[in-house]
Length: 273
Image (cartoon, rainbow, N blue to C red):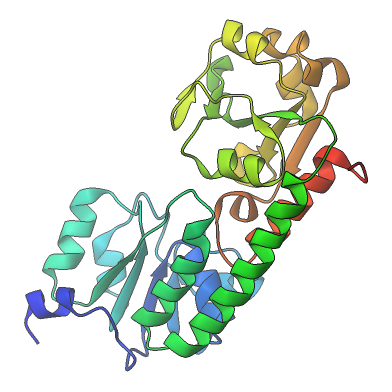
């Protein structure tokens, strides 16, 4: 097969040496019971825990093409957003089969992502069954929260606090969509993507809760967040209402997303309806 042909083909049922880049892609491969076909994963592939026993090719946004090619893979699965672009260009020019799995921050993408991974490894039937089940569970969870009569909580997702500069998740991000699906209001709707938010804007946003990741460099304590002047006079600051969630569960949009929706809703509303 030519290099061009390797790129054009989208299904590789014969692949036995898969490099999986992207925590959700890896999670889906495990859900498909295809873990024995994985030889290496990236640093975001933390679920299930057994995935960490595979060889590590680095962080998905800072990949070394030589490290991946050195694994002698017969398929490279890349979650959309993997990079840097030069590294991806080298991988595609290598002649090795490369498939990029689309990843959009919306509910519809969850089932499609499962189907796309299944198609890439020749497990369409199994993937379709999982996608249907997960999709049904997800929309049931969304419906439960849409019918909630309790006042909607305003939630601000904070990605980082480098040098007191607050980076938040605005619209068109996974945290914003998860907040919506859990029946909340994203307090950073005026921001698009992951952007810094001024102290004045945070105060005006009046978040009831601050949502953060529980893992890695994005993990923060209530002291780190609520001692910042921007948060002190907000409802979240006054109540010291900090919510933490596993980073992959929060942003992954994969098989566990229905669980993520219900977990966040429970954190926001408890047993209230």
